Image 1: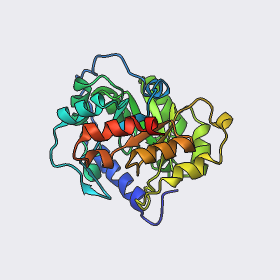
Image 2: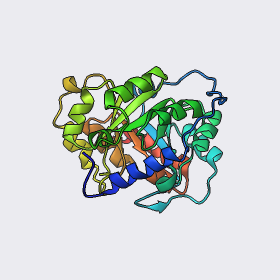
Image 3: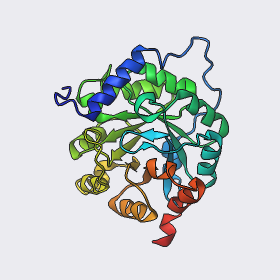
Image 4: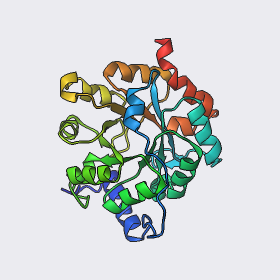
Length: 272
């Protein structure tokens, strides 16, 4: 059911519909999908010996406004990778996050780590764009499926992604969504500590959800804690709660020295 309240998740979905209708994601028939081997975000998380940090490039956010005036994508992405980030998440949503598909392609040409396209995905045309612009993985949001915004159900969307060779990070915000996510073939499950309905953040969200499920129920799928991570202490706390990886955007993009900040997160376990 679509939310009758018209909360922020509804606004994101409405904006996404307009972006799709306006042809923002249209891939030209002559567009050559970036020729390269796909990189696995899931394997990068599972193989990481330090804190598995997925560092995010986003130049503004609905809750914090503009995050970085200097849009030196080359320098930012290089700093993230050299600091030890195992992957980069790239906001491609243009209206609320100042994202662009061009940024995705540029970063793809600069770094060799897995790239996650982060957007408000409602349609398979956005998955085609993710593939063509160089992503290795896409973010899908369980709340959008539950509200009936997506052009296909969650299983069909995951299957379509997999046919393109894209991994899926399926994002949830509560225990019921987490339970539903476990029933899918999503490669990675993300727990968003930010409630997209209200934009409020509470990193205890990850703890509150994971303490209700056993390791056996979760199986071998990596769990990514997203949003609200501001320090190595937060990384250590979330690891104790059962998170395998950490997606950090606002704190990274507003840091004075991105490389130093990301390196501090990557090496968080050494202090524990």
